[in-house]
Length: 239
Ligand SMILES: [Zn+2]
Image (cartoon, rainbow, N blue to C red; front, side, top):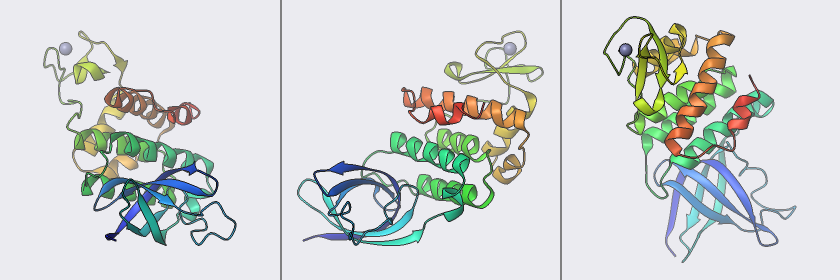
């Protein structure tokens, strides 16, 4: 029977039959996979809580005819602090759902894997609310749909930028404004992320910027995925 091993982040699980669960895992080497964890819902399951969402695991599977079967799981990282903070855990759920939505099954994307594990680790370490907006901006860049922020997409003005129209692909000046209002600080934070200065962007934690960017990033990613995220309700609750 062909086996494989990989590291991955548990995205979600759902029930299968009486005792089993399907586990969706975003792996480093194989992208998004789904596999059966047999007997996981029995009290004496060998998997225990190791396949809880947002955990990083090292798994061994064998390739079944229809579905892969999980044979071994080792915990790599369980993110204890993230689990004990409701806001952080809610934000982690948003990250997981975004990856679930944008990932193509069995298509490896090491950059997305690194982004997800880095964002979870940062949420665990600092509970920083700017992690989700920075993550969304990075995902949009990886997906090739990063909004243009340098000048008005209508008239090329670089002064008095006041709005972001996601469908127009970027920012707009006072005269051309449509779409959503965009503050100078929020634009600066996004520019820092796209410029590779994520650490500096994560320091912009004023409540105003966080609220603005959480709302904006939810709408940007929703538009990209072309469907409303179930977890965007989690983002809205912070407003
Ligand atoms: Zn303009």
